Length: 533
Image (cartoon, rainbow, N blue to C red):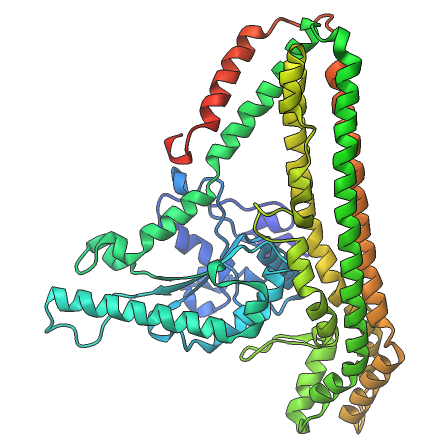
């Protein structure tokens, strides 16, 4: 590629970020439009003809001096993915990482917005069992707009707006409850509706700021901004290190060191046994569910293929659709209507069979914890040991923070890896079907539609053991995750116990004053609500 074509964006050839610094929102919009839009009519003159959107992976906007958005990232994504395969993979990855999904639409068509509901249904498994989404917010905008309101009093307009907001909220919740696919992944508590008006929030003509529900969204974002926890963790790390240093030079535990270590190792082994038992039960439950899914898949895949390939579908329109499906590895996203995923159709019985057990094992609610919370419950019982071995208090406090640190780390790893476990079912089917799609795509002469159908059918019939393979792949990934968690937990705690009671005092400074000060701040932070930091 010649550099003369990239004078306006030389960073593209250097694989670097292009940074735009602006003083106002209007200036930023004018500069960024060529990187975010594909419609050349948006620009004017020669500058308007240079559109770089197809080359852009993502655009990041940083807003200065906004504490509300500290530690919070808002991501604006195309509702139904992207026709470009690499961008679509990025879309799936980002969507799967979101803790909350906002669906934004105008209030006058929110409940009947077919596209919005189709999008939600198509991504429910991606953000539910296959993601980290804890809440879905359906945000209805322009709630202040009313027809024929000029002759009404302010009080009447207020009443009409609030009445319509209530009706819209009820209608949307009813629509959500009607859709079984959504209900499989999300409960009533995780689905919320907001009826908002930015105009009324700023001007207060008819509604109070609270009635616009924008303050509710602001409070939600503030809760996501976990600044308090970040501060606590920072101080806790300092407290942990100072405790280890001061404990090493105090030497008050030497006479009881062996006894304390024995107690700690006994507690650790008991706790590891609990973790191991829970994981074994999980593996058994997964296998039972997947065995049932394999049998249902073998009995139903023929009917699923027939419904997709035939069922009154003939002519050039269906040929073009089927060609798009096989060209894209079994997946096609039309501009209008529901996305088509033949791989997911074939794997649907397996996915349904494991759904409830997967949600139980890997809940998206962080407080619940994976594997029935057994990782969160893991403890060396250091608090009770501190009462018995007071001379070892500093070392035991260090161990407690190490324990909390490794549990938090493992929970983050589990949260990431569980998505790979869940997606393995569809991915295995997709990989096995790839050869069949390539064969079907090769036909060009007469009877192409007939040959494509026959080829796909014959390929599935010859590879019907793919359901067993998909089951085994999921179980293998689950087993690997459990082994990693157990081994990491055991290794880390053993090393921490050894470090706590074998650290040498030579050349270590006396940090008793610093330890006392840090402990004071730590105790203060632990007892302080987030909004008082």
